[in-house]
Image (cartoon, rainbow, N blue to C red; front, side, top):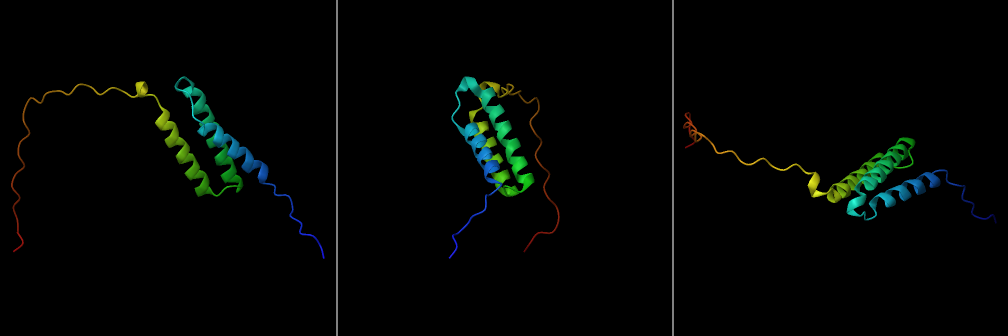
Amino acid sequence: MGCHYLPPVPNISTRSAVKTLVSRARRPALPDAASLTSEEVRRAISALDKAAEKGVLHANNASRRKARLMSALAKLAPLAETPQKAPAKSKATPASPKPAKTGKTRS
């Protein structure tokens, strides 16, 4: 009887590299290190795209991971960068009422 032989999988190194980059990008970042986090996310997204292009990861899998990374990055974005709303202007004239509909009605 022969032994069970598993050939080496060529995609393991690529998968491992992608996992490492994604985990580095997902780690909790300090508020003052936001630029570092966005750079890590950019690298992880690039690696996910390359892995999907090579066929190492399924395209939908890579897309899902990228979406989750971007939503996590959006949650970390500081509130100071969001634009302030302009003060509301007072309306000079009130809106005119809509004209009554004419036509057949259901009976």
